[in-house]
Image 1 (tube, one colour):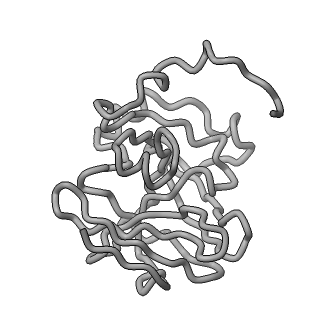
Image 2 (cartoon, rainbow, N blue to C red; image 1 turned 90 degrees about the horizontal axis):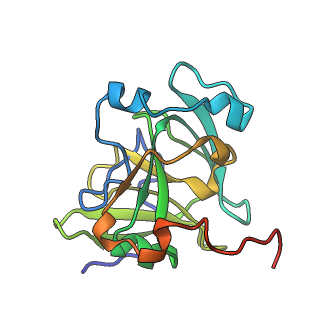
Length: 185
């Protein structure tokens, strides 16, 4: 497994990327996506352009920020074991940015390159200061970017439409409704 730490050599992407093992994006048709889409405007207060909306993201400390255009219907949950390890939690939520719309506004992320089960080299961009996971792209052809939903200001409008690598899902994630809820710890 190849690993690389340090400043992102490819931080001025033209689009977004899909992990060949862990897609983190919807692969169905536009018609299938449209059938499952609630009103993003009602949820975020921002009006999408057609099926698209502008999003603004940043790391926890604010050193790195970006913007992109996304289709909220392409928001997904990945349960693969790599996403579990890379997030330190049960799954990762990602939205695919439209190709050519991702723009880094401030800062320079560090990159960790992981090798997927298919042999694909996946560049995982994160803040070198606070460690926030920001986005992913193909390490060799950074055209398509998967944005980490937790870093996006408009995340309330990005409701997952599909779960991938479900065979790796932790059993308790299937029904969170029965788990006690508190507003604070």
